[in-house]
Length: 88
Image (cartoon, rainbow, N blue to C red; front, side):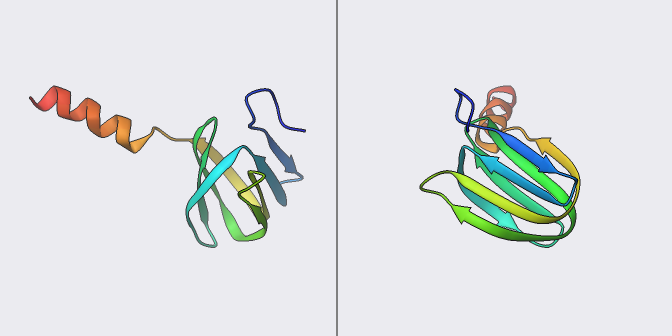
């Protein structure tokens, strides 16, 4: 069940991760998944990563592999607009 914000992460023994509140998958390969979630952009790093389940209507992604790291990243649009303000 998702949290009130609609975004949760469940990691099962570093071998499987389930993310809810996902609105899009920006890119992925066997070492990194970049997701847009209601909690912000999320990068999942590991080895032998494979998408096991994807349902964007429900906002759920399940990834198998060895999970090494999770990072919430800065929204690139917001970062660019801040940079524009400083460069004026």
